[in-house]
Amino acid sequence: MNTWEEFFASELHKKSIRNLVCETEHDYRDYILYPQHSNVLEAFKLTPYNDVKAVIIGQDPYHEPGQAMGLSFSVPAGTKIPPSLRNIFKEYQSDLGYDIPSSGDLTKWAKNGVLLLNSILTVKKGEPLSCNYREYQVLFSDIIKFLAKRRKPMVFILWGKSAQSCERYINNETDRHLVLKASHPSPLSSYRNFFGTKPMSRTNEFLLSQKQEPIDWKL
Image 1: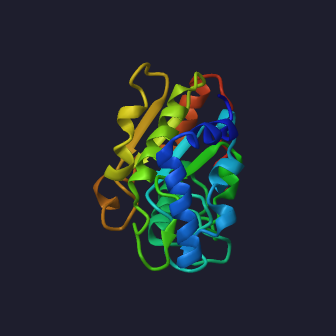
Image 2: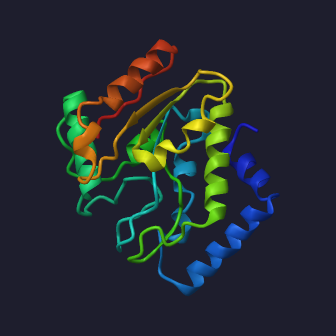
C-alpha cells in the first residue's frame, strides 16, 4: 500500500472501523457534528501519503461553529484565531522570522507536505472529546503505523501528552523518522516547553539532511 485510498480500503475490512463509520453516520444524522461531512478526511485529501514530510497531531476538531475544517489546529480564513494556534504562530514568528499570519487557515501547509492530523476526526457541537470512541483509537494507531512504515523519512511533531502517546508506534523498527516533542501550544501548557523549541526550522534541517526539499512554512 502506498496511498491513503488503499489504506482506508484495507481498514474497512476491520469490524471496528466499519462500526466507526456507522457510528459517525448516525452522529451526523442525530447531532450537529464538526467538521462538515465532506471535510472529515480533508487532511488526507490535501496531503497524499507519499508527499508527507511532517505530521502535526491534534486531538479532536474545534467544537464551535465555523471553526473545524478537517485539519488539526486550522480554522477558515476570516475566523478568529484560537488560542493554541495563536501560540503556534508566535513560535512560527520566533523560529522563522516571518510575520504572524492574519489568517488561521493552514491549507498551504497541508499542500506543502504537512499532514495536519487529528487523532479523533469528528466532534459534537459544544462538546469537546464527545466522539472519543475506542474505534477512533484503533484508526489513529493504524494511521501512525502506516506512516511509520514508509521508507522515506518524515518528521512527527508531537505537542502534548495526547499526541506523544503515539510515539511507541513510530520508530519501533528503525530510527529513520525524526520525532520532535514539546508541550501543547494551549495557553494552559505552552509556558512549560513549547516556546523556543523551533519545530519548523528543525523539521527543515532534518529534511535537508535526508536530501528532501524543505517545507515552505510561510503563510
